[in-house]
Amino acid sequence: MRTMIKLMPVAALGLALTACGTTVTERAATGALGGAAVGAAVSGDVEGAAVGAAIGGVAGAATADRD
Image 1: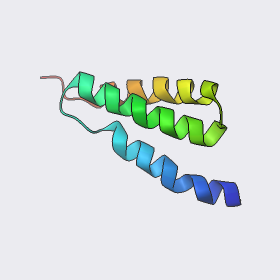
Image 2 (image 1 turned 180 degrees about the vertical axis):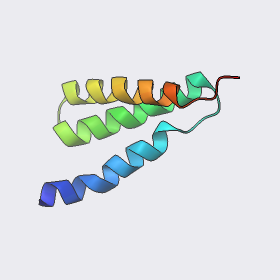
Image 3 (image 1 turned 30 degrees about the vertical axis):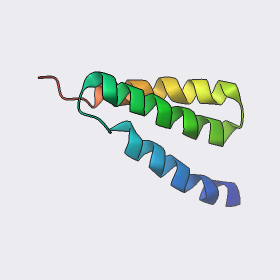
Image 4 (image 1 turned 45 degrees about the vertical axis):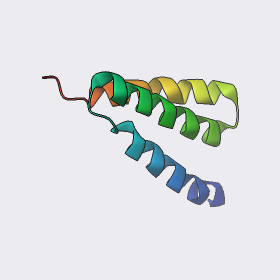
C-alpha cells in the first residue's frame, strides 16, 4: 500500500506530460519521456523505462490534433 501511495504522484505527472506539445512529434516525444520516467520509477530497471517510453510515446501521439 505504501508503494502505491508513493507512485501516485509519479503516475499523475506522467499522465500530465503525455499531452504536452502541439504537434504529433512534440506530444510523442513528451509522452515518451514521461513514460520512461514513470516506467523506470515503477519497475526500477531499464526494461520498465523502455516499456513506459513506448506506451507514453503512443499515448502522446494519439492525443495530438490531426489538422
